[in-house]
Image (cartoon, rainbow, N blue to C red):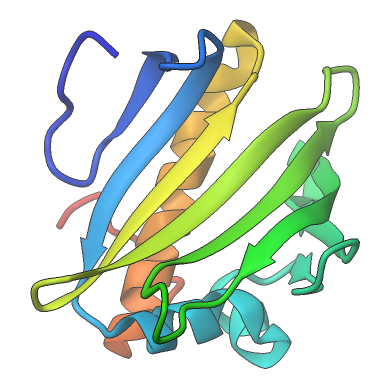
Length: 160
């Protein structure tokens, strides 16, 4: 990547692996287990990301339903919860959007001072829809942040 985005913003560009990608680097003010649970527990995920389902097991189904805008489906290809030997956690799944090649989404959580560093990477994504997908990821990550803070997830943040 050639530019450094402001804290919490996403970036589009060529990654170290030579593929076009979307990347977000955010710090959430909550411990990693709470953020991991928000991502992998269906009862929590359905609150902050309605229409989304991630079966948190390798081979599990993934579905992001955006109503009239369409839906992405996929399959969990890697899942690793944090433990004493490795304090990071990672969930990786495919992303299938009608009419586009399959791409890969990685949610990586790392302990950080005062909370959790969340690195979201959507790679091998076509350039044409990448901007729209990046806007979508931004909204999704804002919703996760509000949920983990205990704030309403459907609040319009365009004026804050």
